[in-house]
Length: 465
Image (cartoon, rainbow, N blue to C red; front, top):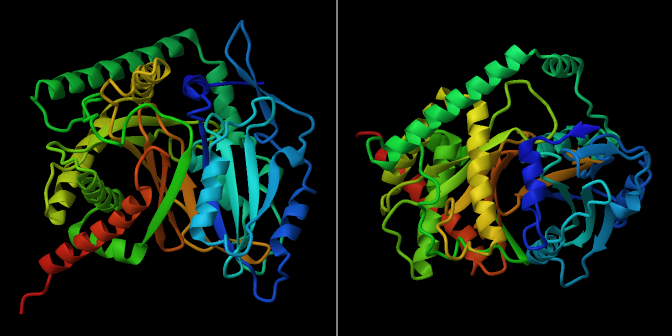
C-alpha cells in the first residue's frame, strides 16, 4: 500500500463530474508502408493480450474513514475495461472529427472502482493514419512522468517491432530510490523537525515576497494570486463539456529566435501565447489594461528523481503589459520569468508545495460553492511545458507524427494550455469547456503571433550594410 501525498489527495478532493482530474495525450501515427488496412485493429487486439499489468497501472484508490487514502494493487485487471477501439467512418475522419471524438473521451471521470487509466485506439483517419489517446488520473502521475512512460514504451527505430504497452512495463522505484525511501521512513524526530523548520522558513520568505509585491516595493518577484482580471471568458465556473484544439511551431524557427534574442523556449512560447490571448480577447470585445496572469506548474523533483505521483508547484506569473510590439513583449516576459526563477531558487521546494496547496484550496472552495463566476480567479489561465523526445518514436513500425498534450482544468479556469516538444515541433494543446467561444481561432492566433515575433526579431537583427 502507498499513501497519497497531500497534492495527490487534492486532485481527488477537487474532482467532480464537471471538472474531472485526469491528464492525457493524443498520439497520431502513420501506418507503415504496405501495412494492412486492419493495422490499427490488429494492434488493438494485440494490446489486449498483455494481461500482466504492472504498477502503477494495477493500483486502485482506497479511501478510509480513519486515515489517508492509499493505493492498493489489484491481482487482476480486465483490459477490456481500459483499452478501447473506435473507427471513424469515411467522410467523418478528418482532423476536426478526431478532435471532437477526443474531446468526448476526455470529459468523463475515470471509474474509481478500477485502476485510473484508459487507452483508446482510434482507427480510420484520413491519409492512412490512426491515433492512440491515453488518459490517466492526475493523482497517479503528472504530465512529465506520463510522457516519460509513453516514450519508454515506444521504439526509437521503425525496425523495432517489439510491443511494450505502458501497463506491461514494471516501474517500481530503482535501488537508489528504494534506499532513499527507506532513509526517509527511518528519519529521526530531529530530522522531521528540521524539515518542518525548513518548510516554515521557506513559507515565511515566500510570504514576505508576496507582501512586498502587494505594496509595490518589488516588481514581479512573484505575481500575486487572485488579482487577475475576472471579466474575461477565460475564467469562471467550470462546466461539463470539452473542446480541444492544437497548433504547432517549428523548433528550428523557435530556436533561431532564441539564439538571436538570448531567450528560452518558455520566453518565446509565452510571448506567442500572450499576443494570441490579447488578440482573442480583443475579438471578444475585451481590451485588458493590465498584464495577463498565468498559473505555471514548476517541476520540484531533484535531478534524476523518478518518483511516482506528483512533485510540482503552481505559481502565478505576470506576462507583458499590453503592447503592440512583439519584441517588447518578449523582453517583458523574459524579465518576469527571470525574477520568478530567482524566487523559486531562493525558497525550499516544500514552501512552493505549501503555497500551491493553499492557493489551490481557496480556488477549489470557490468552485465547490459555485462562486467562481463572482470571485477573482487565481490566474487567467494555466500554461505548462512538458519536454519530449527529440527524435521520432514508433509502434510496430508505425511512426508517431504528432503528440498533443491534453490536460485538466484548474478551478476557475475555462482554458488550459500545455506545451510539448517532439521531433522538431513545439505543440500547443488547448483544452477548454464548451462555453469558451471560438477556441479554434485562438490556436490560429498563436501561429500569427509567432509570425509577428519572428519578423520583429529578424528585422531587428538585420546585418548592417
